[in-house]
Length: 92
Image 1 (cartoon, helix red, strand yellow):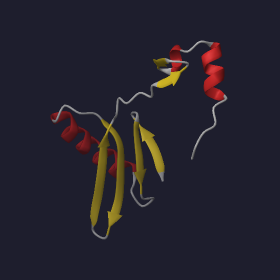
Image 2 (spheres, one colour; image 1 turned 30 degrees about the vertical axis):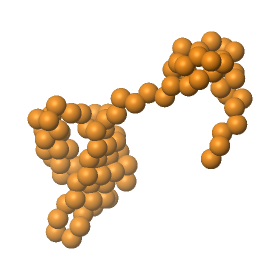
Image 3 (cartoon, rainbow, N blue to C red; image 1 turned 180 degrees about the vertical axis):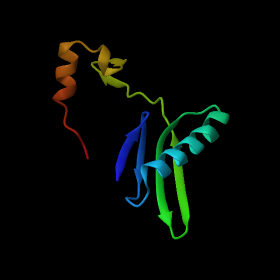
Image 4 (cartoon, helix red, strand yellow; image 1 turned 60 degrees about the vertical axis):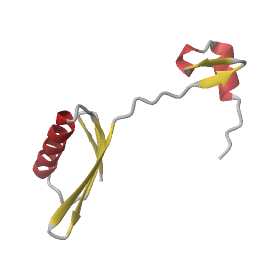
């Protein structure tokens, strides 16, 4: 099951109650705050009698594009550059 709590994307087993989930998140948040980092994603799953918690940092990565010789965030593009971006073929 997927949930978002306080801006943190959380994936967890259905058997975990909201009370348990909140406690695990608070504990993990304290660990990350002590390191000066912010959590972006947490995966909580049951493994027998144990709980496995995997977490990752929130990333400040921005996508920069090159349109007609200009490198910029697409938020700064004018209408013509946005149209060129939308008309591009996406390679998969």
